[in-house]
Image (cartoon, rainbow, N blue to C red; front, side, top):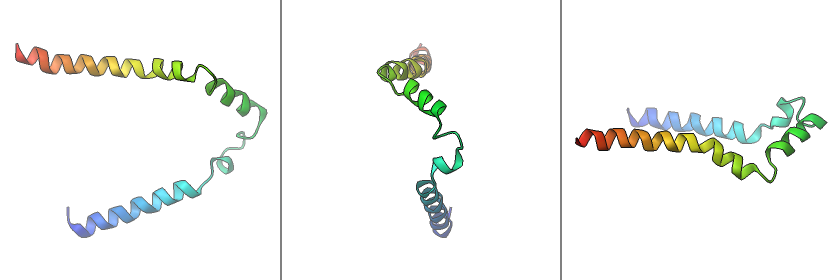
Length: 77
């Protein structure tokens, strides 16, 4: 990859990043300010959010350990 291509790629990345920061999800979502969206938001970000987040991440962690075990321990034997 040439330096010129890398610079062009970085400029495009910065344009996309700037567009993402400027744009608002409220303008793209007609339901974001409704009563239903407030109920959904309060149901997700409540006092049990951390527990549910851990439950969501836990299978990925278990599979990572399993793959590491299979790759390292079994390969040595």
